[in-house]
Amino acid sequence: MRNQWVVVGILAGTLFAGDALAQHKTPNMQPTTAPVPSVPMGEVALGSVRIGRGGMADGKALAAGTYQVRVTAQEAKPEAIGTTEPLERWVEFMQRGEVKGREVVSIVPNAEVKQVVKDPPPRNGSYKVQHLVGGDYMRVWVNKDGNHYLIYLPKGMMATR
Image 1: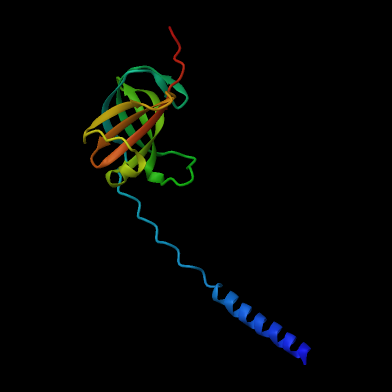
Image 2 (image 1 turned 120 degrees about the vertical axis):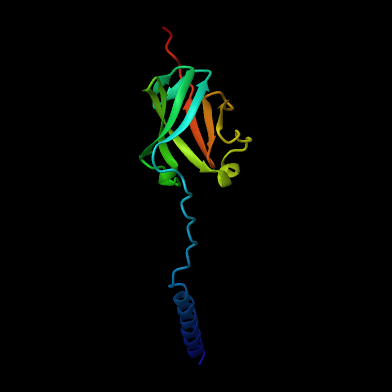
Protein backbone atom coordinates (compact mmCIF):
# COMPACT_ATOMS: atom_id res chain seq x y z
CA MET A 1 0.00 0.00 0.00
CA ARG A 2 2.84 2.34 0.82
CA ASN A 3 4.43 1.73 -2.61
CA GLN A 4 1.15 2.70 -4.27
CA TRP A 5 1.19 6.09 -2.53
CA VAL A 6 4.79 6.64 -3.63
CA VAL A 7 3.82 5.87 -7.24
CA VAL A 8 0.74 8.14 -6.97
CA GLY A 9 2.96 10.91 -5.55
CA ILE A 10 5.47 10.55 -8.35
CA LEU A 11 2.73 10.61 -11.01
CA ALA A 12 1.04 13.64 -9.47
CA GLY A 13 4.39 15.45 -9.24
CA THR A 14 5.18 14.61 -12.87
CA LEU A 15 1.81 15.88 -14.07
CA PHE A 16 2.13 19.08 -12.03
CA ALA A 17 5.69 19.72 -13.27
CA GLY A 18 4.69 18.92 -16.85
CA ASP A 19 1.82 21.40 -16.64
CA ALA A 20 4.14 24.08 -15.23
CA LEU A 21 6.67 23.49 -18.02
CA ALA A 22 3.96 23.60 -20.66
CA GLN A 23 2.99 27.09 -19.51
CA HIS A 24 6.51 28.38 -20.32
CA LYS A 25 6.67 27.10 -23.88
CA THR A 26 4.95 30.22 -25.19
CA PRO A 27 7.58 32.94 -25.77
CA ASN A 28 7.40 36.02 -23.62
CA MET A 29 6.31 39.22 -25.30
CA GLN A 30 9.35 41.24 -26.34
CA PRO A 31 9.42 44.97 -25.66
CA THR A 32 8.77 47.09 -28.68
CA THR A 33 11.84 48.79 -30.04
CA ALA A 34 11.96 52.53 -30.19
CA PRO A 35 11.83 54.00 -33.67
CA VAL A 36 15.08 55.31 -35.08
CA PRO A 37 15.22 59.05 -34.34
CA SER A 38 14.96 61.34 -37.33
CA VAL A 39 18.39 62.47 -38.48
CA PRO A 40 19.53 63.87 -41.81
CA MET A 41 20.58 60.98 -44.05
CA GLY A 42 22.75 62.82 -46.57
CA GLU A 43 25.71 65.10 -46.08
CA VAL A 44 25.33 67.72 -43.36
CA ALA A 45 27.58 70.79 -43.16
CA LEU A 46 28.17 71.43 -39.46
CA GLY A 47 30.07 74.67 -39.96
CA SER A 48 33.45 75.97 -38.95
CA VAL A 49 35.26 74.55 -35.90
CA ARG A 50 38.51 75.77 -34.37
CA ILE A 51 40.69 73.07 -32.80
CA GLY A 52 43.29 74.64 -30.52
CA ARG A 53 45.54 71.61 -30.19
CA GLY A 54 46.35 68.93 -32.70
CA GLY A 55 44.94 65.45 -32.45
CA MET A 56 44.37 62.32 -34.46
CA ALA A 57 41.58 61.65 -36.93
CA ASP A 58 41.25 58.12 -38.34
CA GLY A 59 44.79 57.36 -37.18
CA LYS A 60 46.34 60.37 -38.92
CA ALA A 61 47.64 63.64 -37.48
CA LEU A 62 45.16 66.52 -37.51
CA ALA A 63 46.94 69.83 -36.88
CA ALA A 64 45.53 72.63 -34.77
CA GLY A 65 43.49 75.03 -36.88
CA THR A 66 40.09 75.96 -38.22
CA TYR A 67 38.18 73.35 -40.20
CA GLN A 68 34.93 73.12 -42.09
CA VAL A 69 33.22 70.03 -40.63
CA ARG A 70 30.90 67.92 -42.75
CA VAL A 71 28.99 64.75 -41.85
CA THR A 72 29.02 62.30 -44.76
CA ALA A 73 26.23 59.95 -45.77
CA GLN A 74 28.58 56.99 -45.14
CA GLU A 75 27.66 54.96 -42.06
CA ALA A 76 30.49 53.88 -39.78
CA LYS A 77 31.18 50.16 -40.26
CA PRO A 78 31.75 47.70 -38.76
CA GLU A 79 28.85 48.57 -36.58
CA ALA A 80 29.42 48.42 -32.86
CA ILE A 81 27.04 46.49 -30.64
CA GLY A 82 24.23 48.72 -29.45
CA THR A 83 24.58 51.40 -32.11
CA THR A 84 21.91 52.53 -34.51
CA GLU A 85 23.31 52.66 -38.03
CA PRO A 86 22.19 56.14 -39.16
CA LEU A 87 23.48 57.59 -35.87
CA GLU A 88 27.11 56.52 -36.38
CA ARG A 89 28.61 58.10 -39.49
CA TRP A 90 31.85 59.55 -40.81
CA VAL A 91 32.67 63.22 -40.47
CA GLU A 92 35.30 65.07 -42.48
CA PHE A 93 37.55 67.93 -41.36
CA MET A 94 38.25 70.14 -44.38
CA GLN A 95 40.48 73.12 -45.15
CA ARG A 96 40.34 74.95 -48.49
CA GLY A 97 38.12 72.20 -49.94
CA GLU A 98 40.59 69.41 -49.07
CA VAL A 99 39.82 66.67 -46.54
CA LYS A 100 42.50 66.80 -43.83
CA GLY A 101 41.03 64.07 -41.63
CA ARG A 102 38.04 61.80 -41.02
CA GLU A 103 36.57 60.40 -37.84
CA VAL A 104 33.40 58.71 -36.62
CA VAL A 105 30.67 61.00 -35.33
CA SER A 106 27.87 59.93 -32.98
CA ILE A 107 24.62 61.73 -33.70
CA VAL A 108 22.49 62.18 -30.58
CA PRO A 109 18.95 63.61 -30.83
CA ASN A 110 18.29 66.58 -28.55
CA ALA A 111 15.79 64.57 -26.44
CA GLU A 112 18.50 62.00 -25.57
CA VAL A 113 21.60 64.15 -25.09
CA LYS A 114 21.27 64.31 -21.27
CA GLN A 115 21.45 60.50 -21.17
CA VAL A 116 24.72 60.54 -23.11
CA VAL A 117 26.65 63.62 -21.92
CA LYS A 118 26.60 65.25 -18.49
CA ASP A 119 27.97 68.65 -19.54
CA PRO A 120 25.67 71.44 -20.69
CA PRO A 121 25.41 71.44 -24.49
CA PRO A 122 26.54 74.27 -26.72
CA ARG A 123 23.79 76.59 -27.99
CA ASN A 124 21.98 75.55 -31.16
CA GLY A 125 24.15 76.47 -34.14
CA SER A 126 27.39 76.50 -32.15
CA TYR A 127 30.08 74.10 -30.95
CA LYS A 128 32.59 73.51 -28.19
CA VAL A 129 35.87 71.63 -28.02
CA GLN A 130 36.56 69.93 -24.69
CA HIS A 131 39.67 68.24 -23.39
CA LEU A 132 38.37 65.21 -21.51
CA VAL A 133 39.46 63.88 -18.12
CA GLY A 134 42.75 62.04 -18.38
CA GLY A 135 43.87 64.20 -21.28
CA ASP A 136 43.90 61.41 -23.89
CA TYR A 137 40.90 62.64 -25.91
CA MET A 138 39.22 65.83 -26.96
CA ARG A 139 35.56 66.06 -27.85
CA VAL A 140 34.24 68.26 -30.63
CA TRP A 141 30.56 68.82 -29.84
CA VAL A 142 28.34 70.52 -32.42
CA ASN A 143 24.68 71.35 -31.75
CA LYS A 144 22.74 71.82 -34.97
CA ASP A 145 19.03 71.69 -35.80
CA GLY A 146 17.91 69.46 -32.92
CA ASN A 147 20.83 67.01 -33.09
CA HIS A 148 24.12 66.84 -31.25
CA TYR A 149 27.19 65.67 -33.13
CA LEU A 150 29.88 64.17 -30.87
CA ILE A 151 33.34 63.58 -32.32
CA TYR A 152 36.08 62.09 -30.14
CA LEU A 153 39.63 62.75 -31.28
CA PRO A 154 42.56 61.00 -29.60
CA LYS A 155 45.35 63.35 -28.72
CA GLY A 156 48.34 62.02 -30.59
CA MET A 157 51.97 62.86 -30.82
CA MET A 158 52.19 65.55 -33.47
CA ALA A 159 55.27 65.45 -35.64
CA THR A 160 57.33 68.65 -35.48
CA ARG A 161 58.57 70.18 -38.70
